[in-house]
Every structure is written in structure tokens, then in C-alpha cells.
Image (cartoon, helix red, strand yellow):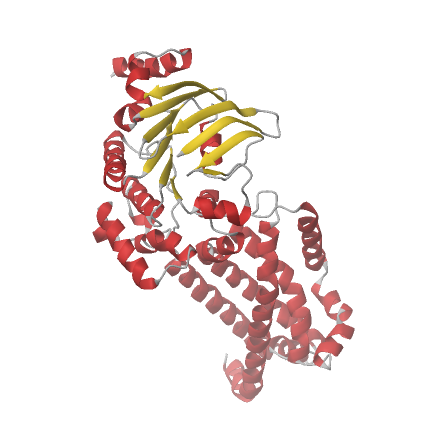
Length: 248
Length: 225
């Protein structure tokens, strides 16, 4: 479904954001990408989301080589993906209903279809009674549910989640992760989550990749990697969790 | 006080005409200044280093045009534009003629106001639109402008008030309006009472514009609840 082959991205300040990164994500998977800040997670998600192009390597999405896609070609592929952000990134001057409808307006969908789709999605994320509310009136968890509904509006095949729970408390995190798992089960959408929290990876991903200094240092089944971490970064990330648990 | 009232009653028709002229000049020049300044402000943001279509030369040139327009003192601008005003309006006297320099003075100001309003916008919202495959024009029309409307309305209040005061200055060199009345009667004929009444009129218009637009901006801003 998604393949990255030897992808390298170097920024102007000659920082190697990604180096020779290779991974593949299967259709219907919940795939986690973990690493510390600056490990290259966001860059990787931007590559998959076609917001940036690699300096070397090859990217395949939905069976298409998209490495050199830009402009309209890139926009066509982007419309088959939805993105959920850490900061929600909702339109503050639009109510919940209009936020969910936004991607459908962009593709000039029919009004009747938009209304029907919005109420479907509001039901899915359990916000039917908040359709007329504005983002400023919602809690963090509710805002993220609006963002998820919006990301699903155009029936994407892939849902990209950029630290979707980092701005939320642990209770709300659980709620959002359960919602993502339900969406994956019910709709069969491939979900990619980037996070720095191993708890998130452990809770819902089936496969995972560990990034360190722009390199994929570990890749495989989440259960296997957590049970038997090979790379020092993986061990470090697991240890941070353990230490935090010990402090409680 | 009684004298003021007698003067007001005697000059009411003149004052009313002046009021209408001031409103006409202000409304027309605000409208045309936004028609020119809004796209300029959008382009300033869009071509900026973090904009949708970064373009250094275009951004520099546009910035220079705006800065030049803003740095010419208004009274000099009126004189400077006399030939152009004559071509466009056919005369350099009267309220319609004053609209030309008013627009030229206000458009760069509007461009900076719009630029400031759009720059306040959270970059994450634009990222979200990009991730959905929105084109640049769609982002401007459906994200940047609607999300900035409360800020734009506050800018509109400042621009309008600026233009009311500039239109009074234009009264010194042949334009109509309340400024003309204040200068003709107050300065040239020493009728201080009439000048005072004119000033009260201008202050009242400014206060009303400020109040109405500020209330409107607060009312439509969904960020503050």
C-alpha cells in the first residue's frame, strides 16, 4: 500500500532529516512510527502526505510511484489520504458541521451528499449534538474527533495521524485511540500514527518502525519489537516509559 | 451655547451637504481602496518567504510600491496626482476628484492591514488545507480570507477612520465635505462656532464607525466565545 525505498531528505541547513529510510505499510494496517523529537518522524509523514518531496529514493502510494508528483497530480493522491494533526488545525470561524464538510467543498461535492456525509461522520465520532458548535466551544478530545471526522470526509484509503494524542490528557488519549481502532476495523482504512509515546504504539499499532537520527533502526511487528527490542533507541524509548511508570 | 444652536440651525443645510459629501468620499474611497489593497495584501502574504507561492522579487517589488505609497504625505500626494485626477475624473475640484488621491493613499495602507490580518492566521490551518489537496487559490479563498474576517473588519475600522480624516484634509484643496466647511468658515472667516460644530460631527462619525465595526468584529469572531 505504501512503500518507502531508500528515501533521503536533506534540508537547506544540511540536516539529514531522513537517511536511506525504507519501510512498507500494508493495506488495512495500523502502523506506528516512533522516535524522539528531531528523529525524522514529521518529515517521513510529510513525504507520505506528499507535502514534501524526497532528495533521493522512491515513494509508492496506493500502487503508484509518487516520488516526483507535484501540483495537480500530487493533489489527486492527497485527496485519497486524510490527516489528523497534534494541534487539531480546525477552521476556527466554521462550526463543526462546516469543518467536517470542508474537504467535500474542496472537491465540489453535491450539497445533499455533503449533508448526508456530515451526519454519518458526526455519528461515527459521536458529535451529533455538537454540529452547530464552534471549535472554541469544544474540549481537546472533541476537537480531535472533529478533525478525525473531517479527515475521513472524502472516504480516504489512508489516515495519517501526526502526534494525534500529544495535546490530550491520558483519558482522552484512550478515547481517541479507541476511536481510531474502531475506524480501522469498521472502515478498513490504513492508519499511520507518528508519536513519541510508546504507550500509543503499544495500544493500537500492529506494526511499527523506530526512527533515530533520520534512519529506520527497527521495523516489524509491534509485539515482537516491544518484547525483544534490538536497537538502543528502542530500548531507550521503552525505558523512558518504564521509568515514568516507576515514578508514579 | 445658544449661539452654537443658532449657528447650527442657520447652517444646517450646509452641514448636511458636507456630511453627505464626507460620507460619499469615505465610502467610495474605502470601497475602491479595498478593491485594490485586498489583492495586494493577499499577494504580499502569498509571495512572502513562508507564503503559498514564495517569490522574493515579486514580494520585494510589491513591498516597495506599498512603502512608497505610504510614505508620501497626503497633501503632497493630492498635488502630485492632479494630472492623473484630471484624466480620470475630468476635474480636480470637488468630492469626486478627491476620491483619486484618497484611494491612492489608502490602498497601500489597506494592503498592509490585510497582510497583518492574514499573517495572524495559524499556519497549521493552512497545512491542513494543503494536506487535503487544496490549491493555492482555494486556500486563499476558503481558508485565509474567511478565517481572518474578524481581523479584516477591525482593519476596515482603522482604514475608514483614516479616510475620514484624510477627506477632511482634502477639503483644504477644493474637495467638499465637512473638512471644507471647517476650513472655509472656521479658518478663512473666523467662525469658530461653526468649526466647532463640524469637529463634533467628524468626531461623532468616527466614534460611530469605530463602535459599529468593533461590535461587528467581536460578534462574528468565533474564536472568542
